[in-house]
Length: 430
Ligand code: HAM
Image 1 (cartoon, rainbow, N blue to C red):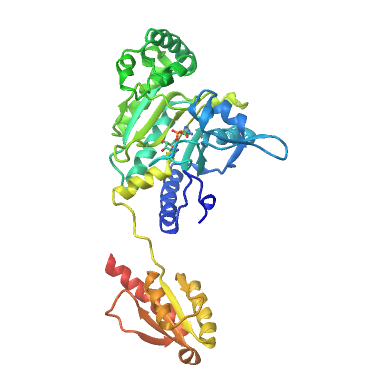
Image 2 (image 1 turned 30 degrees about the vertical axis):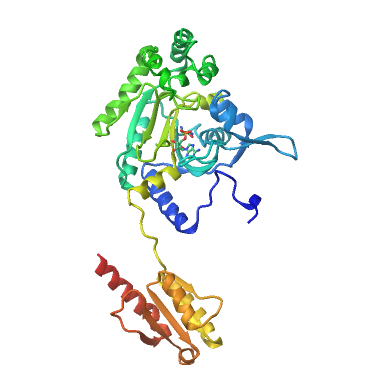
């Protein structure tokens, strides 16, 4: 295949064997979110560029260098493929006045786009399942979201995901801390690396997140945001922790957890695993009480998070929790014109009875059709030749159980016999 007809680097096909598992995963997650009262919302993949600049922040990595932005060639509008879901969700909530009367619990899923350097667990098109709650000011909803995530890990059979928690306080508290932090960091000009120098006056908190070993001592001695939090912020943080303790959810407070998006205040959290190498954060979020107003809506407290679907699926696979794909129930093979007509009737009749059927299409010998029946994973083959068709009969052959003899039966009795045998198999398995 010529080079330019391959998928874009960092944007992957999800082939059928994998996509089937994705569907199961998405269903398990949405069932759990619904059980806590969350309702689905779907937003466009493309949004006006200024939305992301204002929501995520001009000096974040995402906005500075990772957005797929382009000009609409018809009207010159600046557009961007969404790098995350919160901004679009907030825009939709404001635009439709969703949270004006009652608080809202919402979730969405779908592709996000960031122009990052692709590596294991980091893609340019990746998928998130995101959750946002609007209109709740207290620590209860933050904690409830974390409890919901912990329960979800249980549903998915995942352990070994650690919860890290921090509080970013309120903007005024952060501003005082920031001024002191900049003054402190200015004292280390000679050891600051390029990135730290670039961030010194734009995003100094992110410097504390550096992986550079030469800066670790400096970071350890830096003024700590927690010491700048006022009474209300501390009460909120303690409130979240108390509910987690009551529920027996272990957590670690990580004062360096600052997140890469600017809209957060108070609670922030990340769920991290050591099993995926460098890209170990599988779920992350926090509170963003100022964003709705900042984007033009009524002041509305809000809190949310998003999971990385690729990372979670990799984790489930690593821990051996991937279910075997389910084969179909019946594969119908047929040869001859009369047989083909009966085959269609039989297949539709079985489907009327809730049985999954693949009808062989494309002709071929009985032998080659039987090979395909076997490869499909079907439990039964229904075999119809013109001879059977003339008598309104079919052959039923169990493909996975050699102890069951092939039988010839009336086409109208087929569904009942198959259902009986499927029930027998289920009982044996139980
Ligand atoms: P985020 O931390 O940027 O937060 O992304 C959330 C999760 O998406 C990450 O923890 C990771 O699992 C996954 N993720 C991010 N980038 C990539 C990538 N390039 N490849 C694969 N997976 C990736 C947000 O996006 C916020 N909107 C979360 C939020 C919702 N906060 C409040 N509400």
